[in-house]
Length: 384
Image (cartoon, rainbow, N blue to C red; front, side):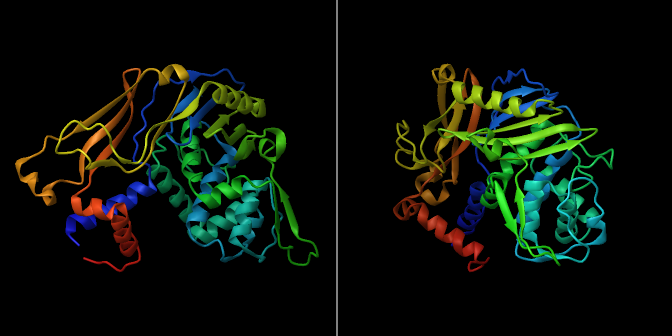
């Protein structure tokens, strides 16, 4: 296996894990809602559909726990047993009523965190996953930086008003939720209406936790998940995800006195005005003019973008390919990425994604040969 091929395989793993499309903002409508700050984005592309002061830094209360939950899930420790500390039990505010010294599976704590907003659960999770509260907060901020949450700083795992330097924006929290919703376990937890956990020590009945999020439990039929929040300083904060006819959207409001209605209003407008259009399918690109590239260039994924009907009528596609070089007669000299596929709406580039060259040998084996290499690399069976 050549070094170039190995490097490409590793790069492709990363591209499969993280979206390879680079979304740009076309015009986002201002939206009239009760909340001080609001945003609605589309899951596939990250496009901002509606917003209201979405980049203003504010306190965020318990929607902080989306970060706590996804870090716990990604830790790979959900089956581990957590011993609840005195510090966790003393956490103020909403609680699962955990007992000092109680031993409980991390997975149960994550459900209690998301459904009942247990602050004791948040501290217990942080201490177990991060080794300490401070260690976990470091992980939170590290993940925030990785996700491009440039106007966010976390100081605790629950969102209580015990630190001045704990804040985010509606947009940053939408970015976080978009990332978290790509995780199947998080998606399952966030959309759960009722969860049963084993009884606490000395109790004879199991715990039963009903989700506090009213849109998820029945108030809005298209809701798929979310997280509630409230503190005296942050006021009401809310995240909701919803899906209808293939369009998946995320709403975030901060300081929203009528947040349930705000979210339903934004969702209903989006589902009427927007549709997720498939622009190009994964695989070979048709209608390539250059004979050198005909039948040899492809996209590694479907290209989809949410648009209004009017926007769809103003779409242009631009395919840019490198001019073939003399030494490319030997296909082994052709780079893996040979161009860029650009989706343009109203003269603005909204998606830019790489175009890949398929060498004859690779084409015969298809992408399965690459995936086989990826599998063995991830399994540690190919080294260099």
